[in-house]
Length: 146
Image (cartoon, rainbow, N blue to C red; front, side, top):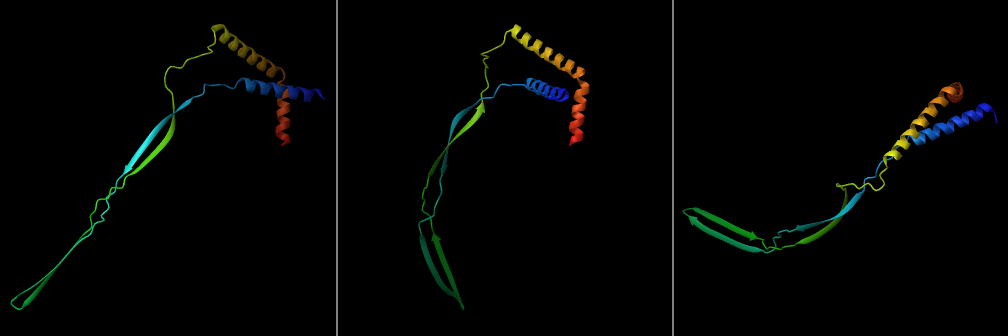
Protein backbone atom coordinates (compact mmCIF):
# COMPACT_ATOMS: atom_id res chain seq x y z
CA UNK A 1 0.00 0.00 0.00
CA UNK A 2 1.36 3.40 -0.91
CA UNK A 3 2.25 5.85 1.80
CA UNK A 4 -0.08 8.52 0.41
CA UNK A 5 -3.04 6.11 0.34
CA UNK A 6 -2.32 5.01 3.90
CA UNK A 7 -2.21 8.64 5.07
CA UNK A 8 -5.48 9.36 3.25
CA UNK A 9 -7.19 6.43 4.96
CA UNK A 10 -5.84 7.54 8.35
CA UNK A 11 -7.07 11.10 7.72
CA UNK A 12 -10.54 9.84 6.80
CA UNK A 13 -10.70 7.62 9.89
CA UNK A 14 -9.55 10.47 12.14
CA UNK A 15 -12.09 12.81 10.54
CA UNK A 16 -14.90 10.29 11.08
CA UNK A 17 -13.86 9.75 14.70
CA UNK A 18 -13.78 13.50 15.34
CA UNK A 19 -17.22 13.92 13.76
CA UNK A 20 -18.52 11.04 15.84
CA UNK A 21 -17.12 12.61 19.02
CA UNK A 22 -18.72 15.97 18.28
CA UNK A 23 -22.21 14.55 18.08
CA UNK A 24 -24.35 15.51 21.02
CA UNK A 25 -26.90 13.73 23.15
CA UNK A 26 -30.02 14.98 24.81
CA UNK A 27 -32.58 13.64 27.18
CA UNK A 28 -35.63 12.04 25.67
CA UNK A 29 -39.06 13.51 26.35
CA UNK A 30 -41.25 10.79 27.81
CA UNK A 31 -44.94 11.04 27.04
CA UNK A 32 -47.32 9.55 29.57
CA UNK A 33 -50.59 8.37 28.04
CA UNK A 34 -53.75 9.41 29.83
CA UNK A 35 -57.15 7.92 29.32
CA UNK A 36 -59.95 10.21 28.33
CA UNK A 37 -63.49 9.02 27.78
CA UNK A 38 -65.77 11.05 25.57
CA UNK A 39 -69.45 10.25 25.97
CA UNK A 40 -71.82 11.72 23.45
CA UNK A 41 -75.60 11.74 23.68
CA UNK A 42 -77.69 12.34 20.62
CA UNK A 43 -81.40 12.94 21.04
CA UNK A 44 -83.71 13.46 18.14
CA UNK A 45 -87.35 14.40 17.97
CA UNK A 46 -89.30 12.33 15.51
CA UNK A 47 -92.78 13.41 14.50
CA UNK A 48 -94.61 10.17 14.20
CA UNK A 49 -98.27 10.64 15.23
CA UNK A 50 -100.79 11.76 12.68
CA UNK A 51 -103.82 14.00 13.40
CA UNK A 52 -105.96 14.75 10.41
CA UNK A 53 -108.76 17.28 10.67
CA UNK A 54 -110.64 17.99 7.53
CA UNK A 55 -113.32 20.64 7.53
CA UNK A 56 -115.24 21.96 4.58
CA UNK A 57 -117.49 24.95 5.11
CA UNK A 58 -119.85 25.95 2.39
CA UNK A 59 -121.98 29.03 2.82
CA UNK A 60 -123.53 31.60 0.58
CA UNK A 61 -124.12 35.26 0.86
CA UNK A 62 -126.42 36.79 -1.70
CA UNK A 63 -125.25 35.43 -5.01
CA UNK A 64 -121.74 34.26 -3.89
CA UNK A 65 -120.95 30.82 -2.61
CA UNK A 66 -117.96 30.57 -0.28
CA UNK A 67 -116.06 27.38 0.16
CA UNK A 68 -113.54 27.14 3.00
CA UNK A 69 -111.43 24.07 3.41
CA UNK A 70 -109.35 23.52 6.47
CA UNK A 71 -107.01 20.63 6.54
CA UNK A 72 -104.74 20.11 9.50
CA UNK A 73 -102.33 17.28 9.48
CA UNK A 74 -100.25 17.01 12.61
CA UNK A 75 -97.48 14.54 12.92
CA UNK A 76 -96.01 14.78 16.36
CA UNK A 77 -94.98 11.88 18.40
CA UNK A 78 -91.97 12.35 20.57
CA UNK A 79 -89.57 9.52 20.07
CA UNK A 80 -86.44 9.82 22.12
CA UNK A 81 -83.67 7.99 20.44
CA UNK A 82 -80.58 8.23 22.56
CA UNK A 83 -77.33 6.92 21.23
CA UNK A 84 -74.53 6.53 23.72
CA UNK A 85 -71.17 6.78 22.06
CA UNK A 86 -68.09 6.19 24.15
CA UNK A 87 -64.77 6.97 22.62
CA UNK A 88 -61.64 6.24 24.60
CA UNK A 89 -58.62 8.06 23.28
CA UNK A 90 -55.17 7.86 24.83
CA UNK A 91 -53.54 11.25 24.44
CA UNK A 92 -49.86 11.36 25.36
CA UNK A 93 -48.59 14.53 26.95
CA UNK A 94 -45.20 15.50 28.32
CA UNK A 95 -44.88 15.24 32.06
CA UNK A 96 -43.90 18.53 33.61
CA UNK A 97 -42.49 18.41 37.05
CA UNK A 98 -39.36 17.66 38.96
CA UNK A 99 -36.78 15.85 36.88
CA UNK A 100 -34.66 13.56 38.96
CA UNK A 101 -31.09 13.18 37.76
CA UNK A 102 -29.98 9.70 38.60
CA UNK A 103 -26.46 9.65 37.18
CA UNK A 104 -25.22 13.17 37.71
CA UNK A 105 -21.53 13.64 37.00
CA UNK A 106 -19.18 14.90 39.66
CA UNK A 107 -17.15 18.05 39.03
CA UNK A 108 -13.94 16.14 38.30
CA UNK A 109 -15.74 13.87 35.79
CA UNK A 110 -16.99 16.92 33.91
CA UNK A 111 -13.47 18.40 34.04
CA UNK A 112 -12.08 15.16 32.55
CA UNK A 113 -14.61 15.32 29.73
CA UNK A 114 -13.72 18.94 28.94
CA UNK A 115 -10.00 18.23 29.11
CA UNK A 116 -10.33 15.21 26.80
CA UNK A 117 -12.34 17.28 24.34
CA UNK A 118 -9.70 20.00 24.33
CA UNK A 119 -6.91 17.46 23.80
CA UNK A 120 -8.77 15.88 20.87
CA UNK A 121 -9.39 19.28 19.27
CA UNK A 122 -5.73 20.22 19.72
CA UNK A 123 -4.65 16.87 18.23
CA UNK A 124 -6.98 17.32 15.26
CA UNK A 125 -5.63 20.84 14.65
CA UNK A 126 -2.03 19.66 14.94
CA UNK A 127 -2.57 16.77 12.52
CA UNK A 128 -4.49 19.05 10.17
CA UNK A 129 -1.65 21.58 10.07
CA UNK A 130 1.04 18.91 9.78
CA UNK A 131 -0.66 16.97 6.95
CA UNK A 132 -2.48 19.84 5.25
CA UNK A 133 -0.72 19.24 1.94
CA UNK A 134 -1.78 15.59 1.90
CA UNK A 135 -5.33 16.48 2.92
CA UNK A 136 -5.67 19.16 0.23
CA UNK A 137 -4.25 16.86 -2.44
CA UNK A 138 -6.67 14.11 -1.34
CA UNK A 139 -9.68 16.42 -1.63
CA UNK A 140 -8.37 17.79 -4.92
CA UNK A 141 -8.22 14.23 -6.27
CA UNK A 142 -11.74 13.57 -5.02
CA UNK A 143 -13.16 16.72 -6.59
CA UNK A 144 -11.43 16.44 -9.95
CA UNK A 145 -11.95 12.68 -10.14
CA UNK A 146 -15.72 13.17 -10.21
